[in-house]
Image 1: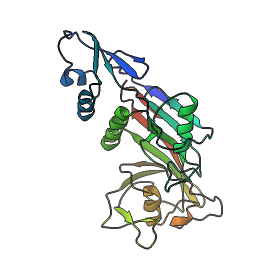
Image 2: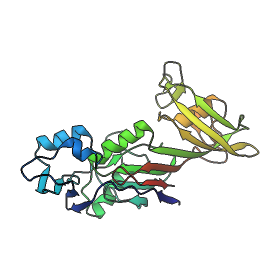
Image 3: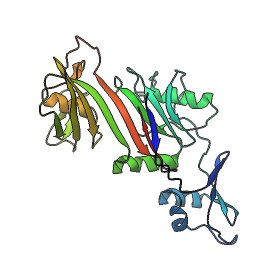
Image 4: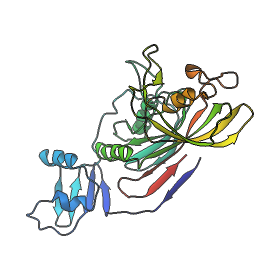
Length: 287
């Protein structure tokens, strides 16, 4: 397990006080309100969330130098907690990173489904007395292993979603794909859409969504290649579809034509996730 952090760039001085975040700000006379433009220079704050808090009168001024923000509200988890031991790669007041095992869906796909990572995270929060809604920032297929990032409140969820859009949240994968892959460095730029003949599958189609996968062959084995891959987009089954389309399905990926003689699930691992912490600015890399 690898954990790396660097480049700490704390923008503000703050203290957690229960469900509130006390923030130190430049001096503002007690009778004046806090200006969004002024605060947003110190603290990343989506304007729509600021307006929501203002409308609900949830932004409180403690002194000319301190305000309280409702950063850590008590929330329902959004599912029934189910205890499963978790490998936690990183955690603070704002985010959680856990290592997802094979065979566990990130979230329920139908009513009443149990045994998901969402329910395990809900139980983890509950066991620590944390009243957080379970908010995943990205997904992995049920049989794919690797790090999954969670936001602990609406504010951080909005910021990390924006990070996904701007590609400041980066995901890298390791995979074993069948055959000899050439060239050894490449970009797979092929749109992906639903397979109308199989509801669980996706396929490369001109009518699909833009999808780009970058790969490097780290080692060429006798019957397979070890790949390192990164995604510029996040389509369902993207790596699996792209590699199958070029004739090199993942080992064990029976849905897309992979050989299951050596492994019974797709040989795909979320090797690393890196992101700039939405509050501190610190860059973390977890695997």
